Length: 355
Ligand code: BGC
Image 1 (cartoon, rainbow, N blue to C red):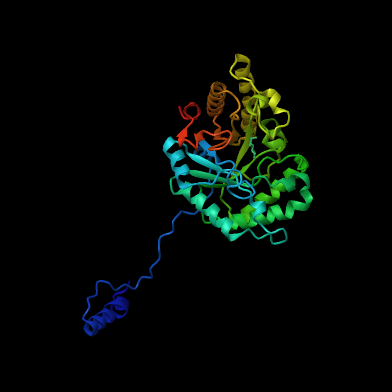
Image 2 (cartoon, rainbow, N blue to C red):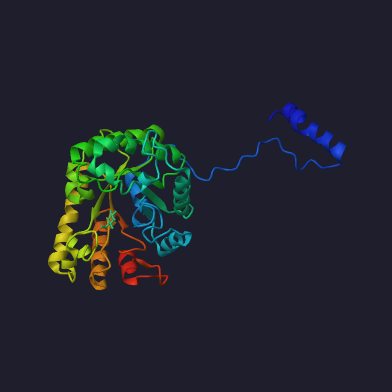
């Protein structure tokens, strides 16, 4: 600050004020008070392989914010759940979010401010602990049955989400759509994913985006993905629930699954099948030079605990050996690693994930 300017704007007024009021000068300041920004926005291109490391060991908060309304599926998030995951050594969180029941049906598809507040709270719980967090769009069921009627709403919701979080740091990732399926076939999905990425890029040129293939994000459908040329800041995701008759035995939403009760896992043939399938994913990733996030895997609580432990351990280690990050499905419901009624970990599962 030039001396003359400082004399006229700081020192002189300060002396006058001191003479008049008998006060000192020490509390006077010309600098406008501006609180430091809470987070560092992303200002330069990111390496998605490096960002993927941040998701290395993640957990899904399933059955909370992707229920039609939070709490309706028995789980309401609490700050201590984030703390538990952080302290147990997890690096990231995948937050399934059902935006579609909190947005208007007509253009501009306004998302409820109260719902944004709740998602902000969850995002900040993770970021403030130094954990990465993926927010997705989960259970937008209508777009799977009638894609053309819902495309504009899908893009309109993402335009708002992207704008809302554009100043947030690199540890926040966007996943445009969980498990495209049914009538959202690969030719359509390849078109929609290019459009949603373009919408997100309008406000978030550098944020890492997580994209998965059709057929409920099956590893076997990675080769159906067509990604926009020149778009490098992507992490590719797939979900792994094989053998399905083991992981979904007794699951009410998997028809006929009561007949699978008693299916165990852990033979040499089981292990070979797992390795072969993850190898398909790795080969795709190598050929296409993309980082992979196994964003969901888990075995339902109707399977025996020993098999669940063996499967969870094997899947996590086989993924890690292939440089994949992972997100266990899920924290506190039917696939839980944490027993909410007893306030304790299911230790065999926790140890399987974080030895
Ligand atoms: C679905 C959940 C389901 C889980 C395992 C998720 O993608 O959204 O509802 O429990 O997969 O089947």
